[in-house]
Amino acid sequence: MLTSGLHATLNSMKGNQKQPQQKGQAALAAAAHELKSPLTLVQHIAHTLGDTTLPLTDAERAQYLARLQFTSSRMLRLVEQLATSYRLENPDHQLAFQFPLEPLNIIEVCEVAAHELSPYAREYGQEIIVHRRQNSQLVIANRDILHDVIINLADNALRHNPREGHVLLSARTRGNHVRLSVRDQGFGVLPGEFAHLQNTIGTRPQPFSGRSGTSGLGLYVAGQFAAAMGGNVGVGRARQGGHFFVDLMRSKQLSFL
Amino acid sequence: MASVIIVEDDPWMADCYTTWLTATGHAVRHARDSQGALDLLEDLPPQVILLDLFLPHANATQLLHTLQSYADWAHIPVILCSSALPENLPSLEAYGVCKIANKASLTPKLLNQWVGELAHATI
Image (cartoon, rainbow over all chains, first blue to last red; front, side):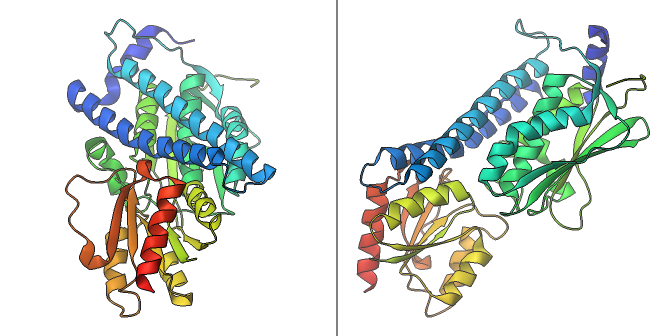
């Protein structure tokens, strides 16, 4: 496990950023928008299930309940990530925490995330595919934080994919880094739009012209979490569809993982 | 009973509206974006359109402008809704928008009431 000193060093490599207060306000505005839509959906589903004049079959009722559970989980996950995000941005805060970094098989973490999202992928009529290579690809990361990054990218892909689409998770080595790519068949995001997300977050409800209904907060948090592990999130090239990636430091440790 | 096109990119939200409206006998079709809505309109113009403000690519205002460009679509009443209504939203009556709603205020009863009123007014 790497020391907390390395953690502090990695944290200091984030580069020039907005003042903490400005960023906090922007994140707050983005969180408010990001939570409005799912909360409205929860309310609508509650109306649907609670209105006895609506003729729902047992299967339809079960489906609405499953959507209620997933939407609630998604909101809880966002709130927890915001708390983590706050702690990362405020290392001197009394609630600041240190998270250990270790060599991890990135594909195994992907498979856990894919398994978690699979029931909901089916709800969207989609599939999550994890491409496993022969050789393990080890990265230096924190398991919980990396899991959140992957969940955010894959969830974003699911939400903007057309029905019958699939989300593809694949990893490959690029020099000293491992790149995990998350590809979908929805509208792509322009690299310029993503590059400006740090400045546009919280200032507009639709930072990506092709992907509505998102404030970009999940991607913003994913980028922040990746940076805390010495990596970064970006938009990759794709002939069609969306392509987000996260680059993380490659572990050169021999492993039986 | 009315024919309605729901233009909403969130399929789960659209399913709620579809359930609410079909329960009272309205005929509902759903499009996830502006182009899909235009395809449905070409097949058969509806009596009412329920339109989400924020859509992928071409947003609602562009669709509203297109609707006004065609004589047989310009009269279709529109219910515009969003989870995040801008504070300075201009008047869109000239674009056929008859109701503007924060989605959080929509209920099955209210939506059916509005669709019934607007469909009746176009007869």
